[in-house]
Image 1 (cartoon, one colour):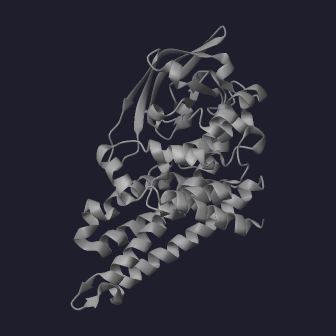
Image 2 (tube, rainbow, N blue to C red):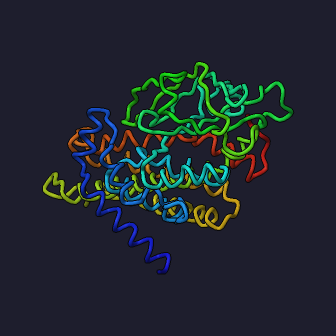
Image 3 (cartoon, rainbow, N blue to C red):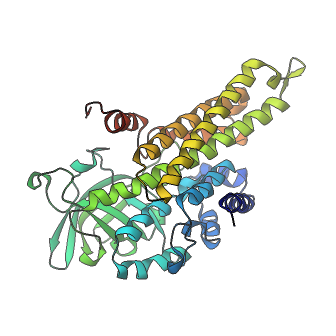
Length: 385
């Protein structure tokens, strides 16, 4: 089947699944700050969260381009793919750098949903985006690592069986390069909670199930190490390009949802005996938002094409995320403005999606850091931080 046909079939199938989870479903979850278990189960049962897992491990063996379409369509349907997107990019670290025994043991269970891999512990309260300065230490004692430290903004930890955890295994003052000495552990949360790990929820402006984690002499078997000790930084970067592309796709989905809703309302809302959409002051911002979303979408697919071909794509993945995040935020503001007072009413869902898409200006990487990356690594300007 040609790739275009496969992608369109995938779009149609995801849209059909999302029809069972209409606006009211997401609105009620948002009001209760509840996790969409039923939705995540439906996605898992349909095989969508196993899109990037190779067929030999029970997955679909699709590319990042197809995986991004799944997440885009969830958001375009009014849902929030942030509830489940982490499995797609965290799984890649295990797939590319895990031992054969780890992959044989875990990937088939992740593919079926018997194990849920939805949590990624990187950011710390005192270091933020300066990952190499993280303080969380894993000290080896025999066949165990003993972990002490803290993580913050670790989303879905309460709804995951496994946690991909980035730690220091060598103190930073003992390495020649600050990127050295980082390692990645795959922690079994079912055994860790209450035995050295405490999870504390953080209530935020959107329903994102995020938490902070406290490690107090948590013991993790050495067999949980992914790849080589001390080599975790490049493993981390390996997964970030996929993350950028997938998040860009979610932003494209959000942006198209906002444009669709703004267009519909502008056609239906009559003021001064005419639909407000007849006014250029209403038309032009919606049209501009649509144009910018389409442009961002092209960069998303360019980055995905390079990623799936095994080519370097750091610049394209970062630019796709920035362009898509900016375009979705612009479209969000346009949708609120078009709806006027009703844009702030829960029953219209615009305010919910407005809050959700605002996140991507800040996370998983802020737009300012992307600009710093482009300035240094693409344009050759001096490092600014």
